[in-house]
Length: 257
Image 1 (cartoon, helix red, strand yellow):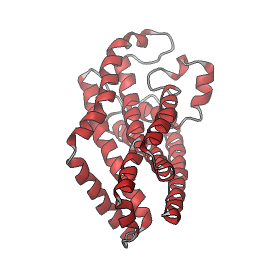
Image 2 (image 1 turned 60 degrees about the vertical axis):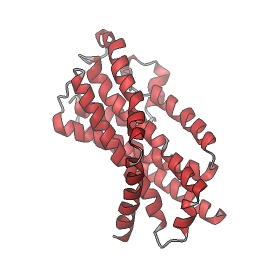
Image 3 (image 1 turned 30 degrees about the vertical axis):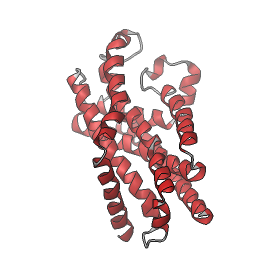
Image 4 (image 1 turned 45 degrees about the vertical axis):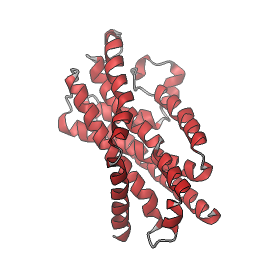
């Protein structure tokens, strides 16, 4: 109970920092909104291709952009850790009675909150652009869960990387190096059936693919519950492994501090 309470109050600290920078949320939404609006119009005829299996490209694209937004938001989680390291905030946490896992968990909780807010905004924008969601409220909830389960492990890995490298420029380069290929080897923008064979093979082991397929399948009511649960299970296992890695990185930082 103490861990949960401490994590909650540390999350409130992060949210207060966020409220003092409202442009941060707006700026992080600009790129996915551009993808949704411009790509939705530019490639809308893609839905006419044989094998695409979607009546509208905006229907197909919206859940993919929601997942992509969660992915890139999670990648920048470590930037806040580096800021705390540089300002000495992390060292003050280490001499306080706060439980150490709460320091990491609070950032993942904060990330999940931001993910939900951004996802709902993009979901609503997609509806304004003409997207239809046969999966209804259940489909939306599954999409949010898939986005959170994707964001948390990558957020944990970003924290681990920041605690290990401790250089903002290096972390930015590493995040872009990892996240861009993961995005384009998943069915965010293109149907899996129309991707090259080698990309489809890679996508089988890509967590972004698991998240997109689960969220899109539920929202569009095209995938059965068993298939969705399997993909969510993969994501949960990935999140557990990533949390363990982040915890190990934090312990290594403590020993070096």
